[in-house]
Image (cartoon, rainbow, N blue to C red; front, side, top):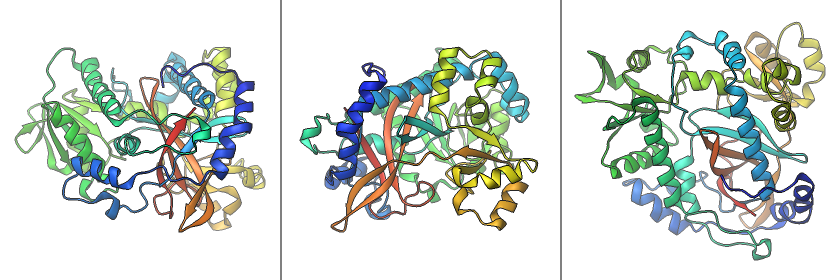
Length: 428
């Protein structure tokens, strides 16, 4: 993704009209070799048939994207990164965040997730996430793709091996940023009740990757950790780094007291961490990033403001004072909890009931201009249908490492849609 050729927006619009939009609408091809994917997953996730246990995790098709749209995504991500590093921006968002978010960190945060919808005007960010799931799974999905729609002249995505090497390099870079040339020995992959997590198979994939680098890697529940004598311990194992998959982004829950104490004492490298969530992933930040005047006051360049104005839909805070106006405009809005994740308790305005609206007004919500998702034609049980498309960019240190699509029906992405799930992205 780092070397996507520059294409101007007019050429991009023309290429979409002629090629990509038509392919996504009417190319009902199967690109996934499920036997090859099964074998690749079995190499990392032994004793579990992932395709059988997760039938809607992977779609049989892929999504087409113009190279210029991929380039636009990178420009939007880069603009976000530059704004997030502005001193006035940091001062503003950290003043509203819990004190733990102010803990200094040099780490960049692994697997930042920028979720896009493809509009007629190009890609638009609908949200930014820390600890975005699915990167390991999507890297493996790439290796099981077959050619489709040769007229598209789109190359197969790059192979899994190069992606996993890049992922490993990312973790090693996180360690080096925090600990210099000290040797990294142990990593804990951390989540609440990890065995019960839907994406547990990729915890196993991460563990395998780390072990292949001669590191000791464990998959742990935070309740299994202890902070003793300045060290974070899993049984008798001292933990150096934590790959954080918790959704308690500020480590407030009592179950997370050990990892919280270790992080505050700088006894571990925690990635991603509360600082990353505060400056990137709180939905209130989208209010800043979509506000032209506020961005200028914070010191953003005119070029970055222009990029963000086209790349992030207008977002505003939900207040009782603005309730009547927001209710009147609700059909053009999407409502999200400011500290939410995974589409939980998020609502399209045109689906709202008065009861739910009352709950929104009592909560901490933002309202975002709706960006209607694009669609992908697909065969389900031999019948032509179409599913909504969400594009996730996995980002490290401002660079897109991997693009993946999620195909779904309903208000938000899910893994319950027949024919849906993760899909590889063909860029060309």
